[in-house]
Structures are given as C-alpha cells and as structure tokens.
Image (cartoon, rainbow, N blue to C red; front, side, top):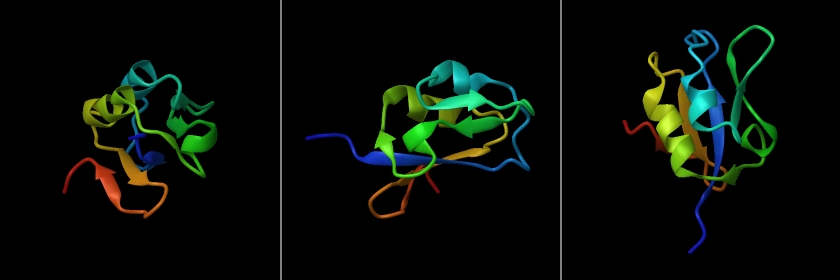
Length: 81
C-alpha cells in the first residue's frame, strides 16, 4: 500500500529557523530567505509522499511549528493531538 500523500503546514509565527526540519527532510522542507521553514513543491499544495524523514522533521521541531495533514482528507497526521 502506498503512503498517504501529505501537506506540510508551517506556523511562521512559531518557527525560529533552527533548520532541523530541512536537515531531516531536505526533499520536503527548506529555509527561505527569512531563515524560516517552508515546504517545497507538492508538500506546500497538492501533497507528496509521506516519508519517515518528514515525520522526524515534525518531531524534531523544537517549537512545534510544523504539522502534517492528509492531502486527501485534510486531517492532521502529525504531531498527534
């Protein structure tokens, strides 16, 4: 079974630009010109493959500025409530 496509949402008011997310999931996240996290390509809009690195990126965020949502149903995947 294929992994559920995911969309990454970044709370830019919380993000401190630690870069842990971009190191954990460079295919999905980068730091923008302001030094804050931003999702790349499909992760920002239509959704792309949910990977272990992406889940780790959400877990490693020191200020919980990242959230993963299902691209299909919109429900939150991570972090858990």
